[in-house]
Image (tube, rainbow over all chains, first blue to last red; front, side, top):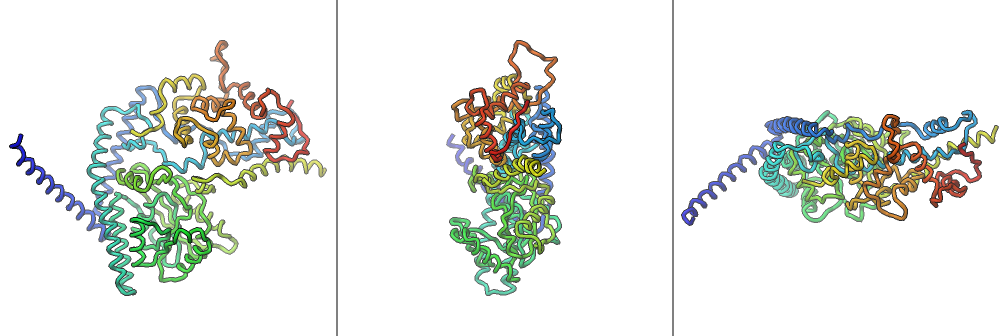
Amino acid sequence: MFLLLPFDSLIVSLLGISLTVLFTLLLVFIVVPAVFGVSFGIRKFYMNTLLKVFAWATLRMERGAKEKNHQLYKPYTNGIIAKDPTSLEEEIKEIRRSGSSKALDAAPEFELSDIFYFCRKGMETIMDDEVTKRFSAEELESWNLLSRTNYNFHYISLRLTVLWGLGVLVRYCFLLPLRIALAFTGISLLVAGTTVVGYLPNGRFKEFLSKHVHLMCYRICVRALTAIITYHDRKNRPRNGGICVANHTSPIDVIILASDGYYAMVGQVHGGLMGVIQRAMVKACPHVWFERSEVKDRHLVAKRLTEHVQDKSKLPILIFPEGTCINNTSVMMFKKGSFEIGATVYPVAIKYDPQFGDAFWNSSKYGMVTYLLRMMTSWAIVCSVWYLPPMTREAEEDAVQFANRVKSAIARKGGLVDLLWDGGLKREKVKDTFKEEQQKLYSKMIVGNHEDRSRS
Amino acid sequence: MGSRASTLLRDEELEEIKKETGFSHSQITRLYSRFTSLDKGENGTLSREDFQRIPELAINPLGDRIINAFFPEGEDQVNFRGFMRTLAHFRPIEDNEKSKDMNGPEPLNSRSNKLHFAFRLYDLDKDDKISRDELLQVLEKVDVEQKMSIRFLH
């Protein structure tokens, strides 16, 4: 056994050398193109291969389900409620018509059967409602070989399990270390680069360098996540003195947008690693960082943002008006603060393809580090970015209407559901004023009739 | 593998629920997934707060009563069986002619069981009668003036 020792150390050193060479080669193939903004097309090829594998896996599972005479659980195809969208008035009239044999024009003020409408509506929302499902990850129609998205356990054959095991090996032992190495490179280059640029005197050269340092580092981070991004309508990209608004799904949105454009970030000052990055970035070009105490003061925030946009030499601001992360199936209420400033708004729609890895950050379930690890052990992050034409507030609109108009445009372009609900409902209860509105609707129906009658 | 819908619901339990409520296999799986997503405490039961977290239910004027219908007398937690039993009342009435089982219990979604359910929504003190006060309480909840004249269903 002791004779094996010299062989052991030889093998170990060989392994070490080959791994180092491998990693260096990969870094060169990935970092160098990132610096120059070129792509070899490796990621697209990877994506197409994965799609073929997923299709095969789904077929196997359907076969397995058929053998047991069951149907696969598909979240969107087997609907549970046959919903017909009718208004409160129509429905209650319908209920009364079918129950009562009296003439229709003797409109009753209240019937016991009216309760059926509210009861049924309530039950429907218990089974499936529009709001709470936006705060958890979107369910997939077909399995993507990640255990975190599997709902059809009973139908997995041996071959599929082997494939899944292979996937785990590839993701955790090959992709994850590579991605961590890239992320480390990207972040340290960003901090070092912006600090160095910060020492230069203000002028065109500094701006030029700052822009390219930022872009280069974000591109490396994009490759660190294996993000495959398709940009549409790049002619509408935001310009100086404008505000860029987008729907928010995760902190990665920032990396995705900033790798294709040069923005001024807005946010709260953090401690730790984030704080280091923030302080370094602001040396190279003016970003807008708020202290925790300043965030509560709406006027102060508005004032600083207005100052920034009025200076045409400063970069477009990047803002996410939803205020919180939503799961990328819908766009929720936009906070009106950024729409009151009066600058040109450049809307951007971001839509992720959850097949390759769900980018949604469920902040009540996962912390930042767990989230990043999940991102780095998914297959890839695939998304589409649409730059919409700029919008300005019209004379008759107020900030809320303008915000809703922008929101609808983004929802339409990205294929997302346009909701009026507030993203803050993730953590808070709904306000009582909404309940009172429902009550008013019903009483108008009853009391309104009474008034008509007493008038005649 | 992670905890997902089908893992925690055993096949035998699924079959029992299917027999009792008449929901199909996929419907039960889907509703179980919904149940677990509402169950923030992850203890296999729902409390009243879990229901009130649904915004569209919170703005429903009769939301509280609907939630109460899920909880049996005096209890604060409802498990999946109880959840399904209450939801089963809302299944459409099928043509029961061919499968009329005179010896077995009436299906949960029969016409009379549905009417019983609606009656229980009015009858707060559970004395099997709707008193005038209980009726007025419902009207208060839907914010109608008390001076209204009321006509009853015949």
